[in-house]
Length: 487
Ligand code: BG6
Image 1 (cartoon, rainbow, N blue to C red):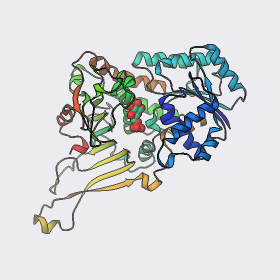
Image 2 (image 1 turned 60 degrees about the vertical axis):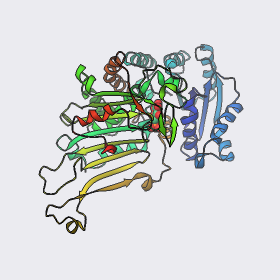
Image 3 (image 1 turned 45 degrees about the vertical axis):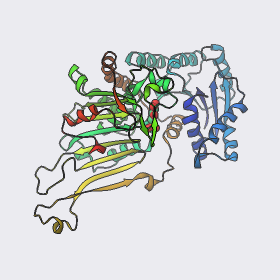
Image 4 (image 1 turned 30 degrees about the horizontal axis):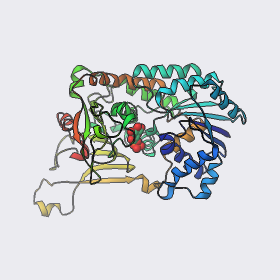
């Protein structure tokens, strides 16, 4: 099978950091179809060779085993080409069409990794140049819009010229091996399904914590914030994976139909819940990796009076028969105490106690997404020497855990998220991509937060290197629970 992959934004941050390394890994693993071209598109005036050199210089900065040898790079570089384009000029799309016609590849992937403001223009021009034929697949990076209306406008422009099955909306969390393991755990095993419901589960906590700040993306991030950057997409996709009903099969639409139902079932915001169940914060100067780091407002590219949130904590519920009444907490932020993405499913206590048990959640399933990829099942057990030590008849049980480490079991060098997703686009597999209705529903749900935050008192400060504003712990404490790692 032959393919052409056109990368709009070919010299941008995403291309360097994620896409090129992922394409190289796919090439190295032998999974990229042999007969392919990767065409970087940007405004800079570069030859193919200069583009290859630029990419090689970036690869040379990579540490360790992921860095290609000169020989490996040379082989990979033979796939790389470059086309200078002004994305507003129809004549430049005609040149792209000429380049693609040279080969008439079986599959043409148009990866739009540009600033979101250009998405509609690129899609329309691609179609005007006749490049939206059945062999074409279009890949759109997040964020797709900045609110429901802009998201709809982009989707409408895309759907005018492409069929939904040609549109690959990326959420790279769906490509992570750990997230696929979450699907496998739920739908490849019968073990958890009977207890995966309100009768047995006390609460669910989703945490996506980053210890990094906004790095060099201050200008972008300041227009975006944690709600649009992480909650509307990654966190809500995790909510779907945890909360959805088993799909009838593994086809893309069967999965996406079930995810959509979860998004539709999320409790709508009211003026009361907006006040009590939605906390946002912004980091101030603090410590990361043992060093002093600046506050968000002092980061390059950020408005010194910025009201953009770098932390969000929410409480919601999936209002359906399976989940009614089970609090679902979502928390994400930059410059938190550690890099840690996990889902904690806290089970209800035993109905009648014959042991003296430690307080707090005793049975919980922790789905570690990163940096570890695995499962932990927390339980109580009777320690051997318990009786002698305590001398009580009502024995004290000790917490223990079953620990499954997928990196150890399957090797840490598994296919990365972008590698997996890029290969899926080339193969035409839509399972791990987001449908327009899902995306719109997610925007619909976050929009009241956007609106109410536009005019309130602004985010609460928290020191870099902590777990966010104390209001986040207070929110969960009102329900009688606490965030996992703070127990
Ligand atoms: C991206 C966000 O989508 O996800 C970034 O734009 C964030 O701000 C990143 O850092 C987190 O991804 P990962 O894979 O490092 O958890």
